Amino acid sequence: MIVELAGATWVLPTAALLLAMSALLILYRLLRGPSRPDRAVAIDALTLVAVAAMALAALSRAQAVLLDVAVLLALMSFIGTAAFAFLFRGEPAEQEARDAQDKGP
Image (cartoon, rainbow, N blue to C red; front, side, top):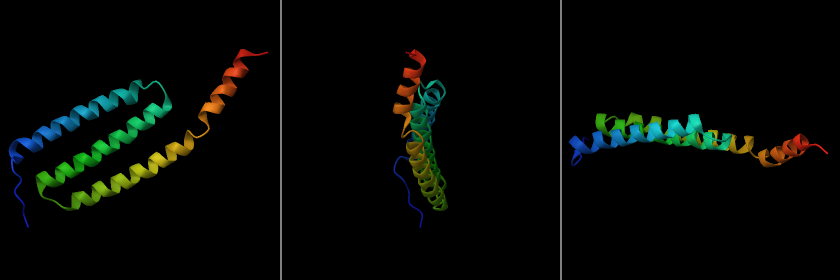
């Protein structure tokens, strides 16, 4: 079954352009980032842009299998976000301990 999208000649390229601009802004945050949690959030947002790009590709090419790829990428992103949450769980206390050690007696 093929579905015709209303306005597909301009909507899909516009959406792709907006996704590309979003990816560039997220890459800037990933590289500049001031802290590690900011970079982790940027990686998570970048994978969400990739999921949206896969869905957009599925629409433009009429390939439903690309939606499966998008779902798998979203699941992997969730697992990565959970891993980052465990990684940064004890960070504020460790930072305070390092600051206190640097100040000395």
